[in-house]
Image 1 (cartoon, helix red, strand yellow):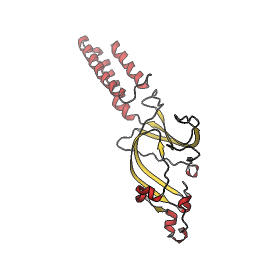
Image 2 (cartoon, one colour):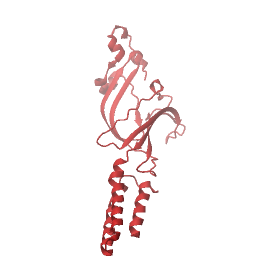
Image 3 (cartoon, helix red, strand yellow):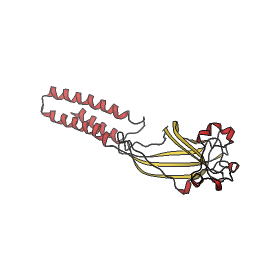
Image 4 (cartoon, one colour):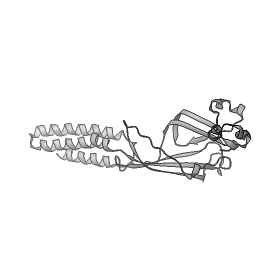
Length: 239
């Protein structure tokens, strides 16, 4: 953002590297009142909690301010659809806006009309596979409890991801199919033993189903995994 109050006329006399990189004032940020700095109160609406690991604030020529934050955060996401779980695709949205200023004070814009999104991976716990992303800055109409005509400038970033389902299929779905095959083989066993095997398999599948149910929120419709397990229950009950 541009703050003309701190425009300096000394840039031609500074080291060219300083002119290009700017003056780092991060260590003085605790003295905002003394520096007479205005800082935008940006917020991510979907963020539940966060921890700032690093921050950089610089003054660039002509009073341009640059602020960069590295943070680890936990988000909530509404509207996720789980019908195709565990082979589902999801779109995660991040909405960035000023917390207290309307669009006539703070207006969001994407630098060079392109948002750069880097999707990191944890090799030890890869749950999502990055597919694509998009970003859009708009002056959206938003209803405010204190001002029904409030307009806030927003930046919406959408991340399209695909769930990595191999672990779920191999650890849960495949063992259930193997248990069903064991029940089929026990058809040639004595009737008493066959009933014991079927009951034991029912208990095992029920335990696995509880584990599956804990991996997604409580929803009012059946997923692909639900239909699969229910079909297994029907077959086991028929035996």
